[in-house]
Image 1: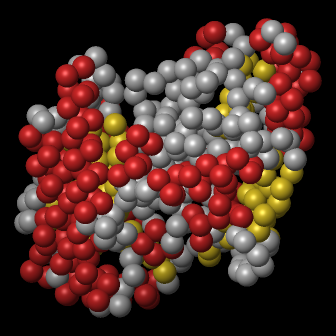
Image 2: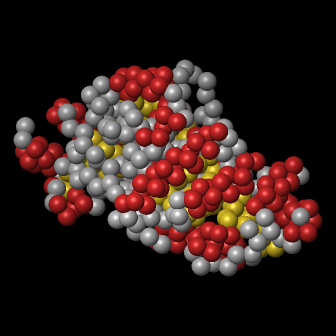
Image 3: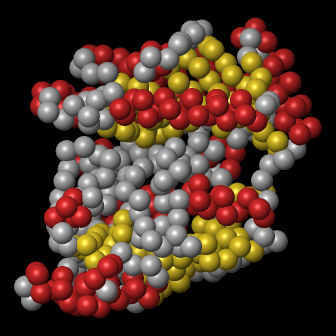
Length: 450
């Protein structure tokens, strides 16, 4: 069938208003936030229900057309880029919360809803979904699950895998598969649910996600540290855990990063420690931290408005970094938490040698390091230097027992480096799994070295 004919046929099946085929419209779905990669799809489908996703997938499977699931497009890895054309299946209109079972602390939602929208819906029930991506105002829950991203509150609340109870999945041939249960734990057979989490849209499309939620804490406060040297961050983080306190978040930023975005820096690093729980527990934990580290003169922020301003400033550091040049690259390395200060120094040192500005932030409690490489894609020589610097950083991270991606996934642009961490047997087994689910390699082809 000629390309224009199948686009027309899909429009007749789905409705013209739910299919985008104009060049200007397709441009909006040709890339994500990783620079230098634009590939136009043949068309974009905008389903609003499970049944419509099934129709699209069955049509694409019949005509052997590539399918690329897409959430809100905030990926920084080239994950939803349609490198072989085909149909981008955008789930942006599937934003409905289908059920909230407050007593069981369960929510069932469509995948296109943002983290912020979901938590707004949960708040009247006294619940929240703690996975906290930095782009939570816009990043979709489906994309969050598909990439395995977990955000800053992992240190206390765990990763996204701890919260996904069940998935309704449309497989590449259009068949439906339900995995997981509404029980909070299960030992019944292979856990296919976990196979889909982090699969980056290569095995199927989520149309419903069942999540475990948490009870909203009664109170929260932050303790702020200006640290004279990076190594003090490691001492403070370990000292807090050793005291029996488990913070909700521990956010570390180097002074060089602050200076890069025009922020005032005191010492070599700043550390934001968030505590949450009952009012009594938060107050007791805050006072203990202030006493344990009194020589560092930490500051306590209990007022809710001021606490929100602290987190607003912290989030703005990242956004200021990505606005410095036209083509920033965002990394999400993971190392054992005790190695964070050492690795932050190494990152700055490596990029200094290549004369490329870099900003470095860390979820210090779980060892995640976000590294924003400040680039202009038109500077060809620096682009190649950045590639070499990235590989050096990856090798150092792996030598520490870490990972080249803690949250964002491999996508298209980290896949060429995946062999540094994963051996060929891993890839051959992964491809066998992919063939079982997707024998014609139609679902997000060309990603994750599959």
